[in-house]
Length: 76
Image 1: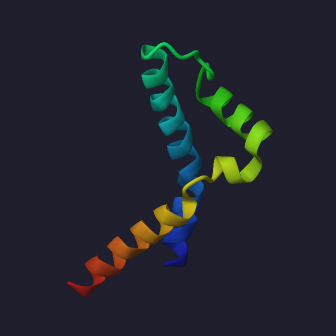
Image 2 (image 1 turned 180 degrees about the horizontal axis):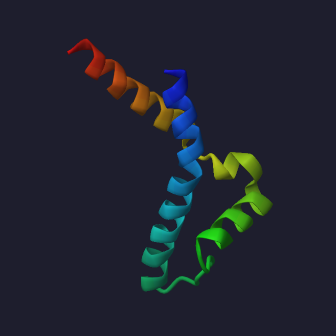
């Protein structure tokens, strides 16, 4: 479970960036303004404005979900 938690911790910032870019697309279509230019811009602005908590937003649920799936597969 420690290895899985480490993998989720490493991959989570990419998921955060992807989600923010996807939501930005929806907001722009609805008349909102564009905040991010690319993935690196998402990381830079998130780190500057929110720090590590912003970059790792949603980490706890992701770890619990992934570890729960692993445990469920192990029981089979």
